[in-house]
Image (cartoon, rainbow, N blue to C red; front, side, top):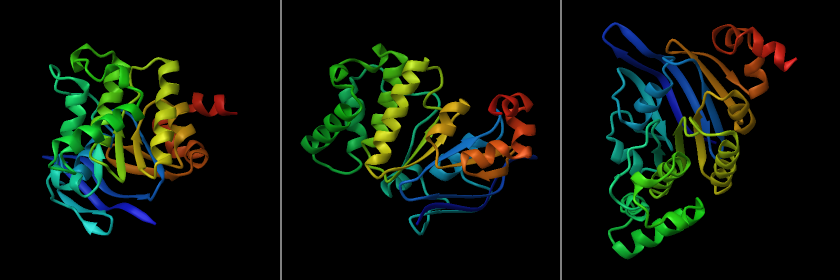
Length: 243
């Protein structure tokens, strides 16, 4: 059953069409990947869905509700959360403080917000860093903190924007385990990622964008064999390596 759908979603910046008539769909408990070169429109699509940008035209439907034009906090309250490419936590506040802020979306009681935050921190294996200031975390820890802040809002759909960028191979494997763990909790995920082996291994379906347009969608195997995707993004070398 569909949890998120866009209908001919378009975003223009003057004469530049950053997102061009995109029809996009995510089903319950599904992991969907979005690939494409830098400037393809992936993050702009995220921003239009999450309310961080207002689309020029088209619709965003979440849980059968038209959320087009809603503010980010209104969309988050409905159960759609997202992370950002560059994490911007409260640098001079603790991990616990940062995650507790997100928890207040679901409760006005401080004790409940803190308890929920602690559960999320434990879930993401950050317990030993609970009282550490965000500015003193390593990159992998900051990535997990960004995840924790989003999860604290108790989403049913979580959108991750290059959450594995800059991580070492072993750290990427740890993040993949976390993503699978989140998904097993019943949360659907949409992931923007440039590391092909990663996105192909974790996604149920893949969308490929190029110059603001969707040029392919399907299973990872179908998308990697699509000539449009090979030409626009993967390159002939990828096809050779796959064979």
